[in-house]
Image (cartoon, rainbow, N blue to C red; front, side, top):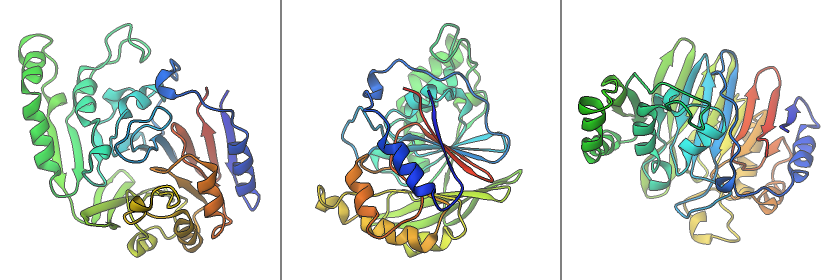
Length: 328
């Protein structure tokens, strides 16, 4: 079953903690066969799905690589594309071919590893009998990618690396749509990078140590909003851009177990102080350890609504905020 927790008032933080604590031990998702039924893109309000919430390059079976899906106005926007993103999309009932817009926070490998799979598999689609619920046509529009300096070069290199496969499927064998394997890339600066039919995506600079530039993103739609921090230390710029946000999805590093990472990331106590200043309706961890210790440390400096990192967590943002845990 899907466990749903609504965030509506002062008791929200306790409700979320109890729901999280009551969740049974999860089987490593990479070993599961569960796939959600195909779902429609969110036409109203905002829907956020944490596809992968893991930290860094190491392979994990319980938390896949960093990737978040935001749905608004019938559009699907993918933020980062870490290891396992395409697998999580299918588990969430979202065909890979329905993703044509990707926003990268930075170019560390753990945030971009699955881009070749999304580019190629989304284009091919899912012929009859696939785990995606039968025949699903491939992407027939270009894959558009926004990211920091170097994004265009990286995407061009991917097209070169897979030139043989692209040529065979486009020109020789399947004769797949040429537009579907076309890539449109943007090296961006801080500011609004997409504003279409009421869906506005704003990129802002964050502080990821020596790696620069690195971005966070804010998505606004019909009076509701979500901010995704990307990888960052405590960022005053993020605090500025996150004012008035409904949901703040923020990274965190456990300084007690990884002091080196804490130099380039945000500790739980620091994140709590940041949440206290921003006052989102719900604070959520991603690119974070899925441990009770992180929550306990955060509670030293923050008492508001809080959700720990969890792959395939879905958040519906409207007059109330519903937190839905993936059925296992």
